Length: 241
Image 1 (cartoon, rainbow, N blue to C red):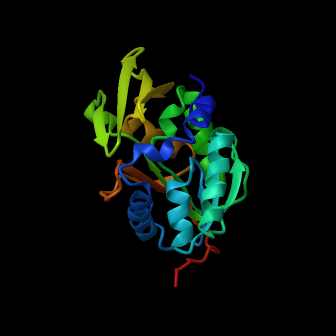
Image 2: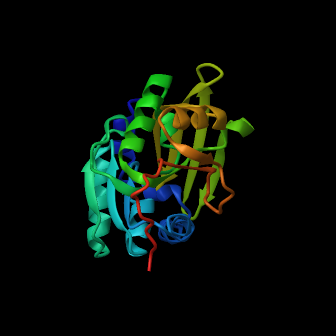
Image 3: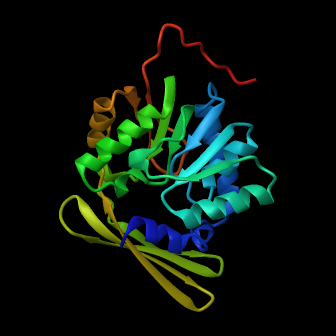
């Protein structure tokens, strides 16, 4: 149930989770680009196979895409090359990011809840903070754990079915059994998550030095938290043209 192995194994099938992956790339890019309008350089710190990185690169951002899964990063690089998009890629752990400093960092698709302890969450929040320029913006998305979800029932998507089964270890941590039925084949992969409530993540971001931590209403598929690093007096605003 190692996170890296889970996403290495899922990389080839990840697009099957979406009803239409290309449309999801485009829709999410519109939402994120509006939130990132003052940024030029963007780090996608949990890029997976490129769902956000590809759309943001197409929208004109200078994108660096990283993930703990080497297989996912390799596929992201292939997808970017196939589309003629200049995306820099790297394999990196959220807890030890050291890829430079960016105007903005995005960490979407419930990546932070893979951090099962307060110590790992604190390390990741600090690394995300270090990855931003003064006044830089962090955007992260998680499932709505405040609503006490219990998994995803089977979803029929064209010729396949996707399902999530959650088996709780305790009140906060659970095993995810992720199933895809496709071409007559059932594939199940497992990993662990922490039900990361908004108050817990907000407190961790504040502790790491972030300011203006908010949960804005957006059209993104999951709740989004935004936070900024403190601005220096010499920092200048960046406006996209």
